Structures are given as C-alpha cells and as structure tokens.
Length: 443
Image 1 (cartoon, one colour):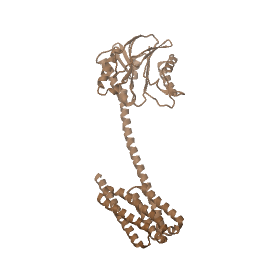
Image 2 (cartoon, one colour):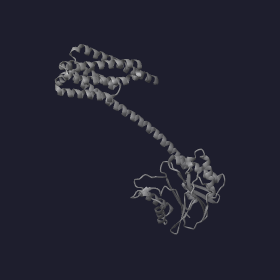
Image 3 (cartoon, helix red, strand yellow):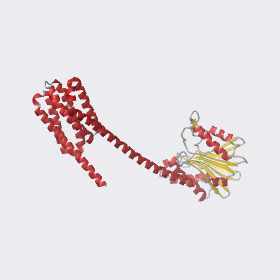
Image 4 (cartoon, helix red, strand yellow):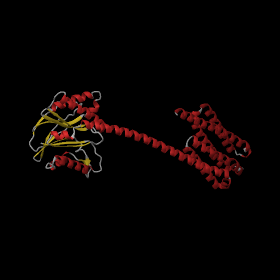
C-alpha cells in the first residue's frame, strides 16, 4: 500500500511537471505568433512588452529544464505572474495605439482568455491564494478598461465571459477543496491529540490507583484512633500531598506530608518519601519522629543524588508518635496544632525540608502531654493558600484557625464536612491552587 501511494504521488508530480512544460512552451509560442501577426500594428512600448514577455518565458523554460522538478512549482508561479503582468500592461499600453480597437479585440482579449485558463492551472499546481489574486487583478483591469469605452468588446466576447465565469467557479471550487482538506487535516490532528490525551489520562488514572494503594484505608484510621478524620483533596488526578499511618509496637505513628508542587512530578516524589518513612520504621525500627525524619531525609537525598534540583525543596511534613496521652512531634516546615479549651497551641517545625538543604541539622522531637478532649491537627498548606472570597485572596492561617475553633463542638466527621463546604464557598469559581490534606484527631 505504501509503495502504491509513493508511485501515485510520483505520477501526480510528473503529470504536473508535464503540464508545466506544455503550458510554458505554448505560452512562449503564443506570444511569438501574436507578435509576428500583429507586428505592424503595435506601438514601440507594446513591442517591448512582447519582447520582455517572450525572453522571460524562454529564460524560465531553460532554467526549469536544467533545474528539474524541484523548481517547477516556484517557476510556474513566476510564469503566471509574468503573463498576468504582461497582459495588464499591454491593455493600458494599447490605449495609446492608433490600432487600439484591433489590438484590444483580436490580441489582448484572446490572451486574457488563455491567461485565465493558465491561472486555473496555477491554482491547481502551485498556490490557490496566488491564483485568486491573479484572477482578481485581471477582472479589475477589465472593469477599469470597460469604463474607458471597451465594455462592448468585453461583453460581446462570449468566449471571454464564459472563461471568466468558469475560471471564477473553478477557483472557488479549488478553495472549497483546499478548505475541506484543511478541515480534514485538523480533524485528523485532533483525533491524534485526543487519542494521546486519553492515553496520558489513562496512565495518570492508573498511577492514581498505585498512589491510593500506599495510602492508609479508612478502616485503618478508624481502628487506630477513637475519633478522627482525613480531608484529602488532590488538585489533579494524582497528588503530592499524602497521609501516612504506621503502628509500631505500642504506639501509632502518623503524618501529613506535602511534596513540592502537585500533579505527576509531586506524586512521584511522594512515593519515594513514603518509601523512606516505611523503611525508617520497619527496617531500622525507629520510633522517635526526629530520628525518623533524619533517616528519611537520608534515603530521599540518596535516591535523588543525581538530580538534586528536583528535591531541593523536598518534602514538608508533620510527623507524630502517639502512645496513650503522650505525643511526640517533629516537623519539616509543617507545624502541629493542639486545640485545648478554646485555644490553639502551636508546635513549630524545623525550618528545613526533607531533601537537599544547605544548612542541615537534626530534626527536633517535641514532647506533648495531651489531655482528654484535646484535638490535634496536621495539615499541608493547600487549604490556607487557596484563593477566594470577595477579594479573591488567600485564606491564610488566622481564618483557618478561627474555623477550627468554631467547630470544636462538632464530631470529627462533621468537622470534615464543614471544612469542605467552607472551602467550596470560599473558592467559588476559582481553580483549586494546590493539593489539600488535613488530618484531625480527637483524644
């Protein structure tokens, strides 16, 4: 099938080349015959115009003969413009000739008829836009000459009128065909893009399943905490935010992490960071949050040591270890909030990420004595960074704290619903700017 297509294209190109040489030869011979048969009736400017046209045509013929097929289309275009220019100039030069009527009626009208057919060939072989412009130039020049008293010659020349009408509709047909071809190509490209987009979306959707598999199930949350909620809302199909739970002997380790960015790249980093947390706990048996973060940072930087720029901001995380009412916390840019008796107690994180950092220090483990009824919150920055409201600005930290304080008399599941509704109303028609993850636990 491919060979047949190549052969057909070769035949088509050769056919256009043959048409080109025949038309070129015919044009040259036609000009020579017109010059010889009407020589005594032509003025000197008209004779010069004929000479220029003949020599240009002969030069093009010789040039194209030696240059071959590659130059045919461009030369054909030059040829059509030479013929149109030659005829238009000849029309106006004939106005000053004493044999004006004879020249115009027998010589120029005949050449105009041939030129219109030539223009049609130009549109077919070379360029529709140029053919259309050339046809318009001839029509305008004829209209201008009809004002000078040549209207009867134009109207009485049936061949010319029929040729002009046929030429117009053929050029129009070529344009329609060209437009249909353009639309067909656009549709084909759109289908290719749609197919590729579907493949990309399918792959990302499958990646979502993989990412979901590393996140704790709802049952795991319910079995480890008396009352808790996780509000998890990725910006895209996959997310850079993730939550993590691991039971280690008599204590529960849990965290909320925010990897740099969002989408596919951040999701890939989150898998590596999740792996680092699991390995620190399961393989090395670490239970102190600060030590876990130190070891996780070591794993992450080793994995990305050949591409440090990708993890320069790394992963921000708030990590806790809970045993009874004793909580230990360590953080990398993400704080811990404890709500007690209508106030928020904030435990500040270390100002360094899990990743490459110029001034690395060991992460600090904070000891927190919890009381019955305390509520603790770990969260990424997606909620407080969301744009919205009447001024379309960021929500920021203080309003988020006020929301949490206002809903302390609600159950954890009810708090999750209220936080979601508030975000939807705040955001309005604006796009979600980042992944969102909030982990709330009642003691």
